[in-house]
Length: 179
Image 1 (cartoon, rainbow, N blue to C red):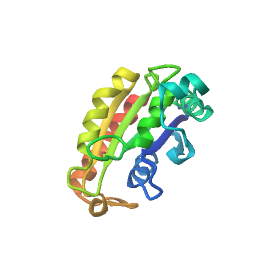
Image 2 (tube, rainbow, N blue to C red):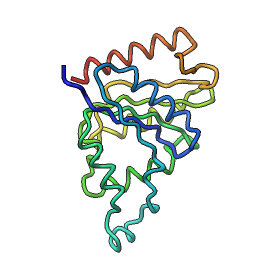
Image 3 (tube, helix red, strand yellow):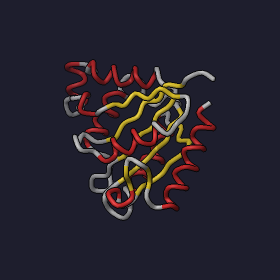
């Protein structure tokens, strides 16, 4: 079986991002994959503006982000929620990278996650992004929300047995459809 290349990242620029930890954890549960973990802090882009785009063009870092997606076989993205929405850092990378090609996600298989310290597990942002992604070339094969991250997560696994089983089922679903 051919080794698949997976890009994984937490959609946050927090250095202590629980979503980065969660994305890495899930991606590393996949079999026969090479995982490349991205950090959105490596994509320090100016705040998107159509005026700035006309003046300076699309920044090289946004083009590099798009190229990584182009060259991968699948994505594991864990969404952080800021006031019920995606983080500014994620939205800004998405906005810039989609300027040359709106379908930025290029129909790549996606496992969409969310996690938060609260009891809803960033479910609002997960639902919103899951609905938006198909318009931008997103192919969401599986999704999972982890509530109460600090109580339910450890490097050894998900502590709540029901959540652990649900996540295991979703990982299997994504793996089977990864190709």
